[in-house]
Image (cartoon, rainbow, N blue to C red):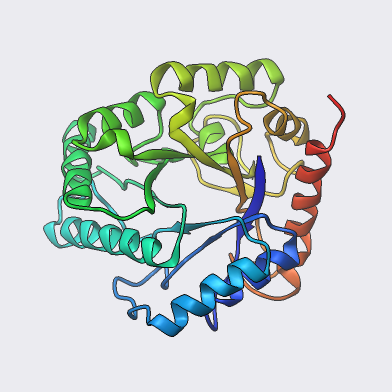
Length: 292
């Protein structure tokens, strides 16, 4: 099991591995573009080379991409739906150029079409994204907190997406401890955590879970709100992360911290990145070093 965090590449993607090393990351997660914009500058050869060199020089073992927040594969708006498909395919291709392990995204909201039609739209979108794709960056669907009609908040629905897509066997899952907890998966005790992952294994298969975002929760169990907190300061509790880190069937996972930044800017550079999030990293590493 390897640990990392979402880090900033502002000022140049090559800076992301440097920021990751400052946090003690073994793996990192990045945006390759602004998370609030549809367009992105093309990656030039010199930028790709500098990024890859920085990854090696800073001891980063794997890089993941988080897709922009504008994505909605369940949208009734054809411009948004087609734009989401194009952006996700482009991010996969960019991830392959950068040598990234995977790219995760939120499926989106079906508030305008209903969940049944939303599921059909997501599956059709996955088919279009994967059609003809030959890159090595893996597409990953992230479990959601399930606010409103946001798709992908249950293992059953995620399983339907994977089974319905033509190349669904090539698509993986990004778990998120806070999203899952807010969606009704109780991770607060060792028994509860084991039950959650046993259910995931039955419905999807733990081999399809490639990484997990590792966040405590500001909100109570099952309230369907996406609100991250530092490890041990939220409603899940520090002990749960000890069980997670030492779970014998989860040792293949990479864990990515998305806990709050001290300055309030997600992924921002500077003191915040080595402050509280650095403390979260220390907690994970201390749990990994516990004697069985």
